[in-house]
Image 1 (cartoon, helix red, strand yellow):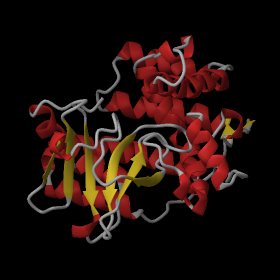
Image 2 (tube, rainbow, N blue to C red):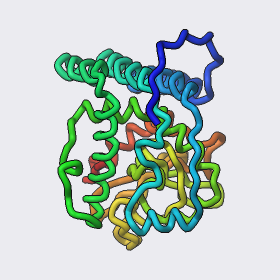
Image 3 (cartoon, rainbow, N blue to C red):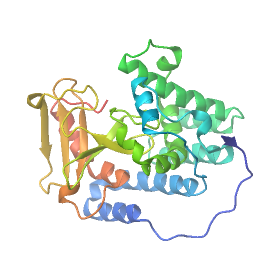
Length: 296
């Protein structure tokens, strides 16, 4: 669902959202995280501004549909169903590159390359290849289908910029699916909507564990201890440790040597905020990697 519109006038200043307020408070409490906080504040402001203009899509499916897609290793979302506005996507690509360069995450050559992609009339085709390629790589990693050129293709920082730029559109789709009770039928460790991997988990007050998609933000139920990357459920091969305040945990898998961070809602006074919690747990990344675990 790709449309193109003229540039829209800027909207008036809106009150800060809670996650922005939490990020600013985190920066005050932990000045060593200031650069990471400022980077994510810039990305969050841009993504929220664009997401507010994205129309809600309509999905027609049942629990049986989810079960079939799970069995066939296919996400629910197809590229043509994304409510994608080309002008907003161009803006997202260009300004995401600006934010990343400002904080040293893009060198000059990468920045110019991304700006060229953002100006390309074929940007929607580039976005389609990124989206389909990301899914193909996940399917190939599952071993359910042979590898393909799409599964092999990856473009480094250009892919990272596209992932960040597409997030407002994918997150809008996730908002719709998140409200559907049929989502309870999904039992896969990859996202039901876009097949993204989780990069955070949430432990609910009832001690359930929900995975949070790193691509669109969808949350879904997953086994309390099993590794979502290799499905290892041998408790003797899962290492878990927590922060002193109990707000966060890390699950390290001794089978695949990957780790997953978790926000522990049993000890928190607020709901999970994936952007805030990703920054707040940066020291846990270092601790997990020192123990021999990898994020990917």
